[in-house]
Length: 448
Ligand code: NDP
Image (cartoon, rainbow, N blue to C red; front, side, top):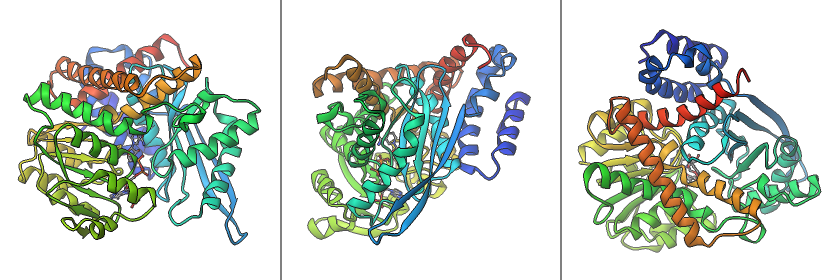
């Protein structure tokens, strides 16, 4: 609930200007609520209309993506890029290919990305993009032709000093490769820093593919240690999803001594109290098969229909790593009743506002995705640095930097929560810490 006239007015305008865009409204409301305590102390933000500017993307581009399917028929999808905020660096954020992609989803992601990138301490503004294209069931050739067509339009809006896309849901190394190849061909030169998540042989960073999942666990470990004096060792963990973020979160949690007992895809979840073999999940996903196949291969595992039911599995730690609003009130209630210690977000905005309130009020540890999943974009930032320096760091070096960044993000969020009078509320802390840096840069740059 908003209480100040300033935030109420800004939120009302967001709803009016962006009708029906529920995901975007949800993300903005959460952030405005968190910022209220500091807005009172910093009247200059209202004087400089910082919130009004902060919630309005600098630019939203939408475009036609025509491509030819295997039957020779021309199909059309809609592509997007939101260039949300460039106060602290070039726009930076992934591309999502999923049928649910809309202006609302892209704006919510770009808005969150601005705060996340600020938290990483690297000089990156916020952006996001994608298309309502469903890569599922498409042939290699169809995916390649789609990516080429998408980049044929997007190239004019991006560049190493302008806007640097990467992967997200439905966009992995394969898609980034096709898009980067097309970009290189159009601009007529190798401009490595124009995209991240590239393959290792052509300028990608070692450790990038694992960075979001690993970073999530480093963040969660720090939070458990600093806020409860405990760690992953001996804990039972649920990881939702089985994509890029999920599998490497499961791998790192296992390396840190936890047992991952459940994972999912959008159809259902697998459960095995002996612990899930992450390598098997990685193989299944590399073959683009469903997670149900795991239960056919591993006799101790069971498969259950309905991905949302994963939260009814008893666990100490929940790592939602699939998609937005994947955990509602019911999911949060089940976790609380089962004595869960903490929920750390790997995906963007996985908990509904009601679920967040339940989890925080029940005293569980909780971190928002913009803080705990920032490892991916952080290593993307390191990929840009390596491309500029024309050298590549070892995986161990990248991992060490990633650990430091995740610790720093925890510290910044925790300290900001203390200063705002809500010690330990990492949602408020992350929103405030991320916002302050961007707001100060915006004031310094005048009315732009
Ligand atoms: P992937 O496409 O690699 O994987 C997404 C996974 O989530 C798939 O297993 C997918 O299953 C599953 N999924 C999708 N919808 C649902 C659902 N409703 N219920 C359960 N499972 C579902 O994406 P990523 O791993 O890259 O991204 C996951 C999340 O993490 C997103 O929110 C993304 O924005 C965020 N993120 C990603 C980063 C990255 O570096 N990749 C960085 C920071 C955040 P299925 O195959 O059935 O669709």
